Image 1 (cartoon, one colour):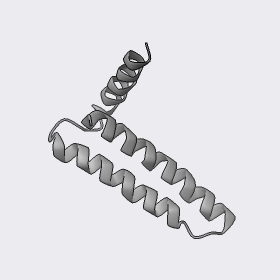
Image 2 (cartoon, helix red, strand yellow; image 1 turned 60 degrees about the vertical axis):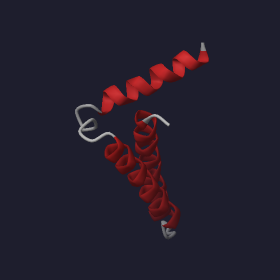
Image 3 (spheres, helix red, strand yellow; image 1 turned 30 degrees about the vertical axis):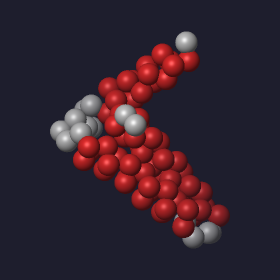
Image 4 (cartoon, helix red, strand yellow; image 1 turned 90 degrees about the vertical axis):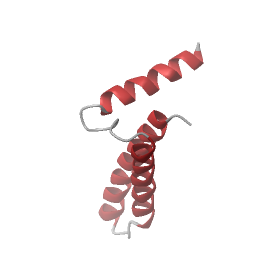
Length: 77
């Protein structure tokens, strides 16, 4: 699997985990699923960073997202 895809998927899972965490706090529930999703997302980002050291940073994150979107557009056509 491409490390860009792992990185972007980890960021997406992390973003959804934050939304799940806020939803659980608003409803008065314990955020077990949100914490688990955040750990999975952080693990995916760490795995991508370990497999390709020095490639991913805050400045290169948009480039990785664009590469994943471009690869998905190439598959669809």
